[in-house]
Amino acid sequence: MHTVKWIWDNLKGYHGRYVVANILQALMAAMVIITPTITGRIIDRVVVGVPDAAGNLIRHVDELVPLVLLMVGVHYFRMGTSYLMVVLYDQAAQGMKYSLRTKLYENMQTLDMQYYSKSRSGDLMTRLTGDLDMLRHGATWVIRQLINAVVLYVASLVYLFTINWKFTLILMVTSPLFIIARNKFTKISRPLFIAAREKLTELNGFAQENIESNRVVKAFAHEEYECKRFDEYNTVYRDANLKASFAWLKIHPLVETISQSLSLLVILFGGLFCIWGELSIGELSIYINLSWAISSPMSTIGALLSDFERFLTSAEKVTELYYAKSDIVNGKNPIKKDEKLKGQIDFNHVAFSYDNNVVFKDIDFHVKPGQTVAIMGPTGSGKTTIASLIGRFFDPKSGEVLVDGVNVKDYDLAYLRSNIGMATQDVFLFSETVDSNIAYGDEDLPEEDVVEFAKAADAHGFISRMPDGYNTIVGERGVGLSGGQRQRIALARALAVRPSILILDDTTSAVDVETEQSIWKALSEEKFKCTRVVIANRASSVRDADLIIILEKGGILEMGTHDELMAKEGYYYETFMLQNEGIMSGMSKGGNN
Image (cartoon, rainbow, N blue to C red; front, side, top):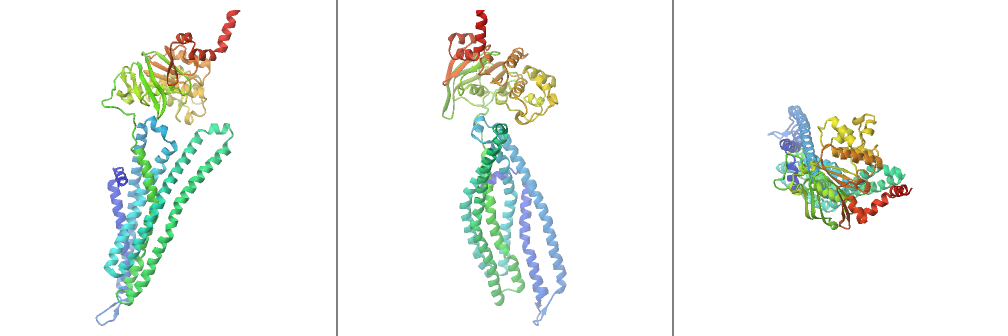
């Protein structure tokens, strides 16, 4: 019942059309009894004849044409009603599908990184496409056929009871057998349809991953290998669907046997009742013409069970995403100021872990507005996590992250993040123009400002050499651009929002040293003031930072300026000397000459 109510709620705006469509379907099903009734009347009054007072059969031939015209009129009325019904059903179902897809997408935008880290992209895409199509199919075709079957069965039985209740009662003995078959099918099929849905998710996930990694596939000449892997996923999905479909075939012979036995009952007992004088030939023809109206609904309902189980499985997946909630949400009365943040950052004894995996236990540091803090450390030490906590993509397990002396949990999320510009090593560019990608955070950004920020990121040169300059469409995820070019466009995008806090997560890893120095020089001359959080593996990227933090083994190993850390001759000293060995050696030789 919860699923039905949920579907009804999401038909908002189309309730009237949906109700009218259901009424029209019920009316059409009930009208099925009209044609057999007219046929029976033609047989009894026109073909056989009605006995008069003397016992002579009088054939009312004059009624033939009006009765035939009435049959034609009923036929065309049902055609018109059917057309209107289908239009109303489709309008309601497509409206519901549009509304649901919009709500699902909007809800996905509010979900936190924790949710996405545990969800497969293929599964989310299936929910937005195939599962929604199944809901539309269920709300129209399945409901329509169900109403048709129920009304047809009930209307036919009621009508036949008015003709001969004893004969009708005999025909009803087949009904419980249909119910038994239906229940048996439900128990068998539900787990199979859930399994088939899961295999579709795996297939979509594999295909999407392969499309995104096509460059790697080609680099290793693994096209044939990937085709074999896809064939394995495709085969498993096909077999799961066949297994689910064949579940109905196990019940189908029973359903068909019951259906055919009903026809035999009509012929056998109908003939006997005619011999006994309790049925006329015309009334027997009504039973013959409506016997399908008793057996067919049961068979239809049995066949609909397959679609209904698919519908329930898809509804379960869609509602999971529909009601999914983020743990990262605005608190009561979130802070949202008219002016920009100043950019002061404080980590007060912050601890963080992914599930049971501890990243760090006690991080404590202070950064003044306008300063540059650099974070270094081995892989897995939590460098990127520091940046994620500032933007509140995650919340710490304990301790506080403060910006301008206020806990980030107390800020309005949109306001906080609008004050943060972020450029990461793993760059994502949209399939839009270069201009649109740079101005993504500010759609009203003037073109001359886009150029200025591109220059600051040392991107103007190669952009201007593109076929259409800033109006060049970049491929999906920036395909066609080098890693360094993508990073520089991403840096320009981060700068374009004029952030109070600029987070650079290994942003210059894909550019040469000369370009890197040019970028840092341009950033130091940037007109607006901002606090910079630089995550880097190159010591050359951080030596001029006001504060350098070295993370290792769940905490801060070293912290200080370049000169202070070099004097300690610890991790930073060793890293700097290793990365600059050639330079230092050359300087040493030059000094000896």
